[in-house]
Image (cartoon, rainbow, N blue to C red):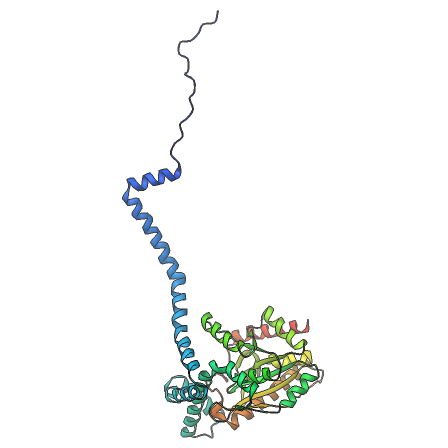
Length: 371
């Protein structure tokens, strides 16, 4: 008979559930005021870190944009002629005192050495007067376009037959524009002739400022593309020209990745983009200047299409056409120097390393055009 041990193990009982993580956290928080303080300190540290990373940038963006929005509101509330006169007065009064005027004076001494100091001062004051008027007239672009469509009285148009002939032939048109007179008015002229206008411009670093500029230019019917010309924007620019549209490009600025060609007697890095696209797509390049007559009145001059050489040497043809386009812009500047923007570092040569990078980017863009 089996002997039964008296030291039998008691049967297992179900384990009582312990407190959940949430209950334990609440208990620790209630029991320890120090843990509560540390929790809040961690939150505050995270907030401070987020502010250091993003808050200052957002605050700077808003702070920089507020004066421009206030200026827009004031000028928009004034009649066009009064706003233009006020902007001109502010420009010619404050502009010559700014450090940027030294750059304008250096440019004038380089390319127009025949001018005396007094004559250079007159040109610089006229440049600031014109720039102040351009800024003050900018909020009125949409109104200007609508009023000119009903009754043209502020914009005198010359040479429009060159523009319409290229359009009627089904070819794309590149409007080569310079920072001359009120260059923003060119889009209104094109729109009033029933032509959708697409412009390439460098976006400002401040997104709020970019939003305001985009809204004003859209009121004229302008479609904006970024000047970086990468990805979808480059394809859209080419598609505009292939469809027989109008593409506006500023052609008087320094471009380190461009061609080293003469401009006003001195070599200057010049973008061949307008000429290169027209060369590959058989488009017309029409130089357009918006000359200021008096106050908020202008003369829009459409030059004859640029002669595009076709010798079979693509590189030499593009360089020759770029030089010819520079000569057209030079004629505008020498005739009315006070209406051109002399503040650009137009004749500055780039550093060799940066130049090589720009040249590679330009060759890549040409390869994309071939495709």
